[in-house]
Every structure is written in structure tokens, then in C-alpha cells.
Amino acid sequence: MASTFFGLTIAYSGLQAANTSLTITGHNVSNINTKGYTRQQAGTQAADALRTHTTYGAIGSGVVVTEISQIRDSYYDVKYRNNMANYGQYSVKVIWDRLKIILISLNSTDIKRNTKISFLP
Image (cartoon, rainbow, N blue to C red; front, side):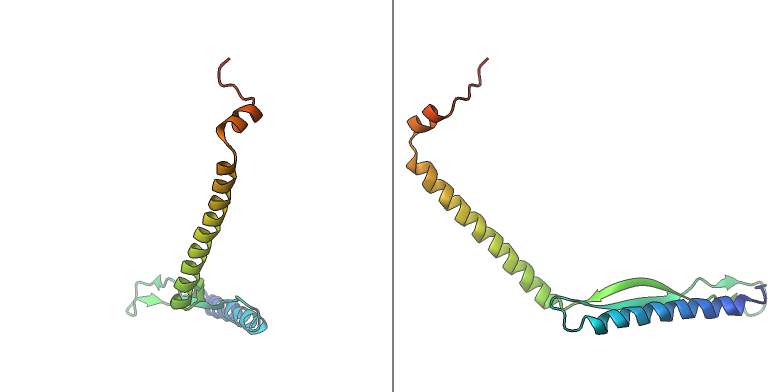
């Protein structure tokens, strides 16, 4: 059987979960005009019940916060990732084209004359 203060423990777990949810709500409200901020949400579920060997079977033991998740639009996430991938490919292509121009402008004798690296002992 649960102790006399078990009801207070259940109430305390509910207050903790509500406090976490209110804190997250405060963050969402204070960052409403912040560019790039993603709204968050607390996920709660019932805590594991205590089994009792009586006619009613189990006693609930409160609530727990299981996760804090971001609420995002997957369409915009995919668009952003695709655009960043295209930007990365383009920037690498620009650097590669500049490097090719530099290498073409140098001929092999200039490279051999300016580098004094020997791979033989």
C-alpha cells in the first residue's frame, strides 16, 4: 500500500510537469519574433503505476515529462536542406573553377622549378 503522503507525491509530479510546460510556453512567447526560432512542446505521459494486490489492481503515480520536441513544418525543412546542399555544391564548383584556372596558367616547368620537394632520400 502506498504511504499517506503518496497523494502529495502525485500532486508534486503534476506540478513539476505543469511548471515545465509553462516554462516552455514562456520561451515560445518570448521568442515569437526571433528569426529561426522553432516552437517547442512538452510531451507528458502517466508515470508507471504501482501494482497493488487488492481488488482494484494498480494505483496511478502521477505524470512525467517524457520529451521536449520542436514543432516544425517538414516542407520548409526539406526546402532549406535542399537549398543549402545546392549552395554548397555551387560554392565548391566556384572554388574548383578558380583552382583550374590557376593550374592551367602555370605550366609544369614552373611547378617543378618552384617546388623543391624531393620524395627520394
